[in-house]
Amino acid sequence: MASDPSEGFDRVSSADEQLLDELRRAASQFDPPPPAVVEAARSSFTWRTIDAELAALVFDSTVDRPGTALRGDGPRLMTFSSSGLDIEVEVANLGSRRQLVGQLVPPQAAEIEVRHAAGTTTIQADQLGRFHADAIGSGPVSLRCRLAAAPPGPPVVTEWVPL
Image 1 (cartoon, rainbow, N blue to C red):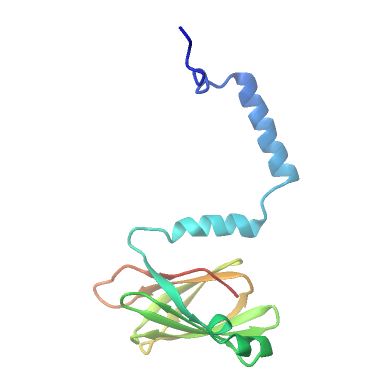
Image 2 (image 1 turned 60 degrees about the horizontal axis):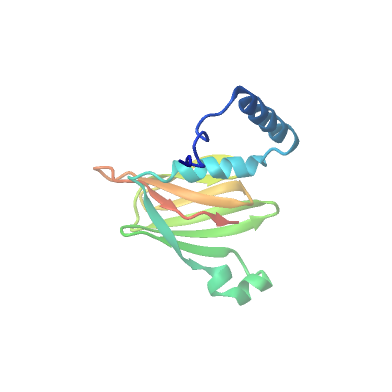
């Protein structure tokens, strides 16, 4: 009677474990993943919680009005939308840094985490929903809004967009 060809693959010998350990050490020493990739991977799991609501990018001036983006006529404008909240953001280039100025619609106070390659910057939106963040590095950015309304609802998280 023929045996199952996959039999025995669930067992790993000590020699195999030793080889795998050596390969892991070599890969981490000679070809480690870039820090930005590691941070992006970690961040991708932090916002994927059951209680978070995703705000989709519904307008981006670099896509919806490409002529203005090519000429460099002013800041980049973006709108993210979820079922109960719109987040309007204006992004100005300040050399290698970015300045974000935004508005929550409908207007309301909130704590906003600007998640970017260098970490997280926490800012406050006032009662009119206005907020700003200075000195954000270029690269992927996402906003996580915790509305101050009572009772507190789920946070609203934007898609990651490159700045």
